[in-house]
Image (cartoon, rainbow, N blue to C red):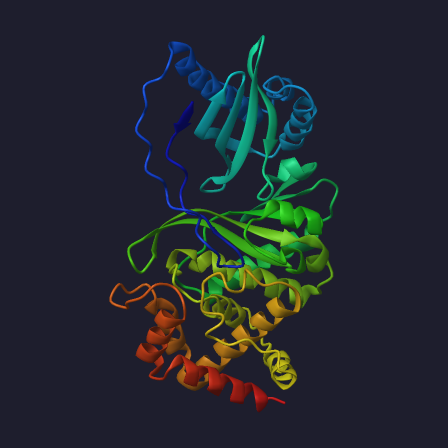
Length: 407
């Protein structure tokens, strides 16, 4: 027997950009159940998920583990202990679909939670295997290859400052991060009069490369980044304008972040807060090079020398190749580094050649329904032609010539 329900909202993941998840499906027409017992199975499974969510939110370790069976119980005990003291609220496990065959059920579940003092909710998709025992349905296994919750990765400490709630590995000294976050928040308030930053953000710290991969989704090479902005949004219309920012968080990858000096930390924080501030203004059609270019420009991260060296070595990407919204998120290693360098060069060139106002007009152009086309090089070319008066190919050549002159 199969049962389906509507899935969750769109997801935007990455260093200020990424790929929305699949749109909400239309609920399937309910088929008549073969027997009342099978209807009862579905209701019992939903109640099992409700009890599980309530126990986790209340910090009741034994009650949470009691919803599992076999080795899952010990995993549940560890997760529930780690989640205690994190200020979780509105924890929910929403069943999107269920396949029940005899004494075994396979569920697709949306795992949601909020954090006290922080707007919005955070979620991820799960696959849950449940079995019917003498005491009723119990969770045999819960899996999610990526996008795990922090308490599922290891012990977590919660630290609060005026504008941030930081969830970091227990015992990790993150005072330097907290200082950089608050300093960056003040700087952003001076730089951006609108849109305004939110009153408080959640910051999740990944203690290592493996944790960084587990906590995120759809981003290659995340372990080499110092930080990234992660926002869940809803988009409307052909222009993919953001109608709602459901939730926002910053993910800090501790190994690369901790090696930075004060100036580097400040630059990283300013970069990610720029993405956070602009999340509600960033169309789902905006090219990756422009999304990153804005943040690199605001954080004064000039990588023109690196771009010039890459051109000599033949390692520069093209603006056309970086025009898909998730183009940079798909890269890793040296190719990802080159993409950031060229995005920085493009941003600083446009500001120098055309002025800051037209640069920001280009960023906003993708929200215009009158600009036809889906995300990619074609609509990027139209926006560049409309705002800057030249073709995308010409802009690419001019940026390349400009970075060469920097040598």
